Length: 387
Ligand SMILES: Cc1cc2nc3c(=O)[nH]c(=O)nc-3n(C[C@H](O)[C@H](O)[C@H](O)COP(=O)(O)O)c2cc1C
Image (cartoon, rainbow, N blue to C red; front, side, top):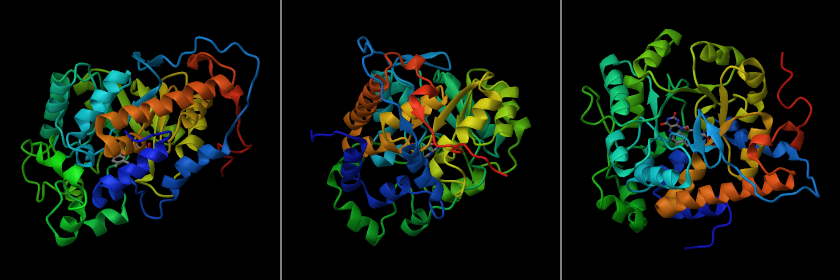
């Protein structure tokens, strides 16, 4: 195994080993990619306060997210097409998460189906749902998640319409890739990926194909989204989903205090401050900057989680110190998966865990639950003083 010391190492190998179409799909934001970039670069504007001569023995990053024990407060975010980054990618990532002791969230737009992931794992995972126009399909999807014993439903609210990512259009993104000349030329250089794909049956959208009628091109994420995702989604429909599900509910994609209040009112167990990794509304604030006003509005009523731009344990520590109760990584685990399969996801989690633990220690803490804003230097006006 190559020596991996940080998430960037995994990204370099991922880029070499994965078909261009799927690397670009992962590594894009929408339009100018301002929000995608700032999700990460805004973490760099926050500094730590180093402390010394504090007893640093017996450290722990263990805590809880929505009442579930976690080895560290870092879940794997739902990522569509994960099974195209590496054969059976969702199963590999779920297994790595399970062994590490952190939650795995399966996307509606996964390649491996809910049932396939349930069969290959031993602990409950979380299921992310996109709200569909077709109520019967949506109800069946939620029932399938219940039957698979998923322990939380993550409802994504920021994708009623799709943000444009230029490269997906240029590359003709599809699952599986269409046999065009440029795809064949690129795939022929990715033998490891190809061998994996030849060895699995999971090559289409597993939660969709065979479960829904009337899609013009079942391999195209873009046409499926345009035809099926519900542009009329409102809070009444979210309440209906809450009642259908009846279990732990997480609402994902909240960026404003007003929306956070509505989410708390309808009884969400957690909200995720998220801009979809900068893939939807370009020009939205980074999530780390959007966090504080949301915490002020609902921090005592529901758990506030955050994703977007996290590439290190230092980023996780900053989000927690700002007040988030949990975080998620999207691209950081995909880099690991595309680089080295399950072992790569494990490595990504190990890297982030070590960085989190050691940075926490440098800031003078032994227990992640005791970390607060006092370990940070946050620039004045960081969370906004907006008109
Ligand atoms: C390639 C890719 C696919 C994604 N697919 C989904 C999805 O199917 N459902 C969803 O709710 N979010 C999806 N997201 C958003 C992630 O859940 C998460 O919000 C985001 O990746 C966090 O930012 P980060 O990648 O910088 O960690 C996706 C993100 C990426 C990068």
